Image (tube, rainbow over all chains, first blue to last red; front, top):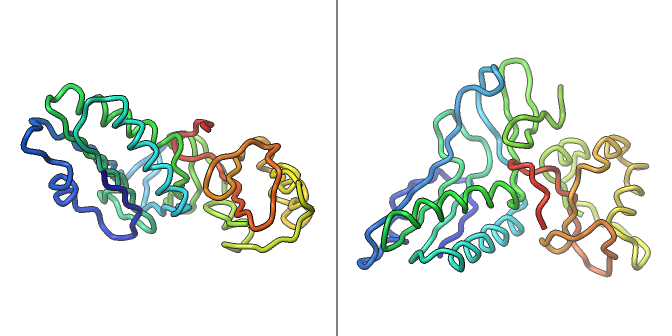
Length: 144
Length: 81
């Protein structure tokens, strides 16, 4: 199990190597990447803020929960903080398991849980304004 | 206290040391801090609370040395404990 909160770019390969096992035929990888639009606005970049100690603790709890629920062999979760440009990876989840079905399911469930419990926030910066987002990007918490 | 995201922007600070009466609850602390940061009142009902990096209920009583944070809705928006 590997959990990381970092301001550095996320390269998936070391995380894949970390979870891969000779006895496991499946590795499922999810990358959350910064897209260039939201709610019809052209997004310039995002800024992620985290409560690092708590985020790490919550991500570890999610990983333990997923390991307990699915017959997977390992899981790694990483989240970027700070300023991210369009196309950069903000969230990485990678799961290994003997077969693909549980790898896909566990990976999806991990992403869902992370978005519920991790104290990590994103500020969207677009042309002419910015706001902290909540609720899958639907709600502006702080309209400008 | 620690402040993140919109609450960091609003208060202009990352951390604040406070003397509070023993047993003050986290929601009472939020109410008291509205005097110092009036815009905190805009968040009534939408914040979760953490003490020492774990989610706690609104009536959680504070003790010496506790690290408190008010947690704005996270990106999934769900209120989970």
